[in-house]
Amino acid sequence: MTTLGYAILGLLSREDLSGYDLKRRMAGRVGYFWSARHSQIYPELARLENGGYVTHSVVEQKERPDKKVYEITAQGLDDLKEWVTQPPVPRPTRDELTLKTYSVWLADKEEAARLFREEQLRHEEQLAHYEELQAWMESRHSQELRSLDSPWFASYASLRRGIGYEKEYAGWCRWVADSIERVESGPHSSGRIRAHSTTEPEDDGATQVP
Amino acid sequence: MTTLGYAILGLLSREDLSGYDLKRRMAGRVGYFWSARHSQIYPELARLENGGYVTHSVVEQKERPDKKVYEITAQGLDDLKEWVTQPPVPRPTRDELTLKTYSVWLADKEEAARLFREEQLRHEEQLAHYEELQAWMESRHSQELRSLDSPWFASYASLRRGIGYEKEYAGWCRWVADSIERVESGPHSSGRIRAHSTTEPEDDGATQVP
DNA sequence: TAAGTCATGTAAAAAGTTACATGATTCT
DNA sequence: AGAATCATGTAACTTTTTACATGACTTA
Image 1 (tube, chains in turn red, green, brown, orange):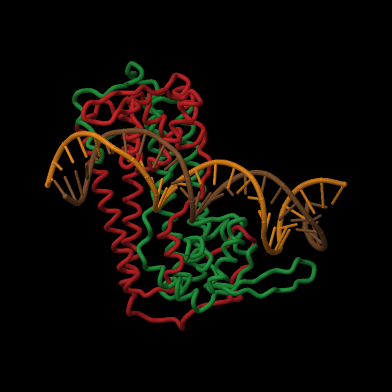
Image 2 (image 1 turned 45 degrees about the vertical axis):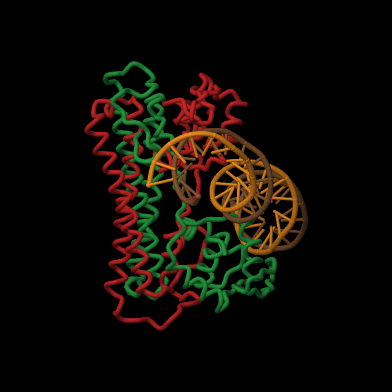
């Protein structure tokens, strides 16, 4: 079973949904931490059904195309429950902005400052959006948030991760942008630095910087 | 040009390296925010050379196999500089632990608490490792850290991102684990909640929770 | 009437992981 | 003697993205 499969089961454990519905959930909500396009969702649903994790029934609609509504099976629910507490398979981080940062010493400083200021804004906007959701949940679902068996608690816990992530990311962007703007017209070193100096320890392949 | 290509160029802008050296850098250092296996690195180096971004020379070694040492070209350096300040292509977040959290309401609470406690530890260990590097950089390279044109500044800025990320992640794990442990033997709601209650707004496909 | 939503699929390409393959030297 | 390191590649597979494909109905 793939992680995408569990993402789908996680949604179906809360409500019965069509492939189209799942696509929309993967754009917002769950999409904040796991996303997929419809071209990935439809084949995955077929695989899940083949494996006995979900079943579907065709719902005929007037004025709208018919749809296949998927429901999680007892087996699917059991598998999902099991998976939740298994340690996640370690995936390497891939963050393009941090990678750019690693080469920012080569870049035009004005453009670099603009980049980090822009990214700071992006993350602050996302944070504001999350905080709206948080306020809404805390006001309208304060009871359920305290029950570990409620999906609202689970949603809330995930949301808190998003909030912490965006807050930290925005703050870091601000720090980088500030650092660049402060020193922008300050003292300069003489161009590129290549070939390590003698004070640097030899590379043992694991513990060195930069 | 792929992001992996720029990751390689970012390393080669600092020192000339063989494919094997690059593989090691991608395991630590740069690997903290962009990683690749050697099976991806060797073909990418060939593509980069084909495009005129790098050149190589064979270095014969006694007692060790000969190696190809790659050097960045003027064109490669220009391209890298340009790329650094371009806004990163938005990539969807994929975080398996947060996805698991979304379904944690279904899980055994004792096992769930153990999971988040373990993950907290993992992130605290990574944080400790980063903070060692930080202390080392601040003591041995305090001058270069203030120069925007120094690769040490760039490494330091990237490292600060890693520190913030791990600190926030560990803190969130602790919060989840604490939440579960505090209420573990508290009041229970009656099993699964399916089919949304009437107080929930209809899904407009973008702004709803959970 | 043009754009957008609802609805479901397939195909091709790119990116990334795991496995296959080889061979010398060095450390335990 | 066996495991690990140095060194470079290819092949197969999985995952993800982008593009192709269709068609009815609704809103601007």
